[in-house]
Image (cartoon, rainbow, N blue to C red; front, side):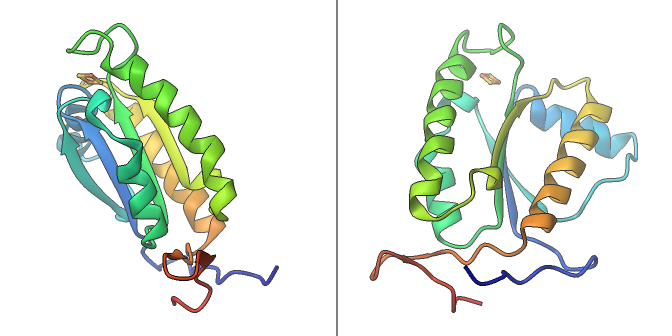
Length: 154
Ligand code: FES
């Protein structure tokens, strides 16, 4: 397998973050208001609950060339819709097992729980995930026409 292009330290990666409106979006906001230093690679999409997060959203992003997808929601038992995050956790575990069959490293997908008051935890999560994605390098994406990993995409 050919060596993938590694990013330079200052190269911005394409990381999507799907954050629950009630907890993690607030946690990211708390981190921002507290002026905690964070990587700039993440583009945040606010969702009502991780239970609303169809794994196909992450799958489509990754086969389209996103370098990483991070999902974060309320801690178990704190979900505003009672069990949305518990259903989500089951789906995300299946997705992680499924990604390698498409030639996508499962490490490009991560889910976690961060509450609105955990600005520092949010900073740690996003910093660690960004570091991991920088280590993995660019995601070549997936060519739907040939069913092959698209090594010439970039
Ligand atoms: S409301 Fe936040 S994960 Fe369900």
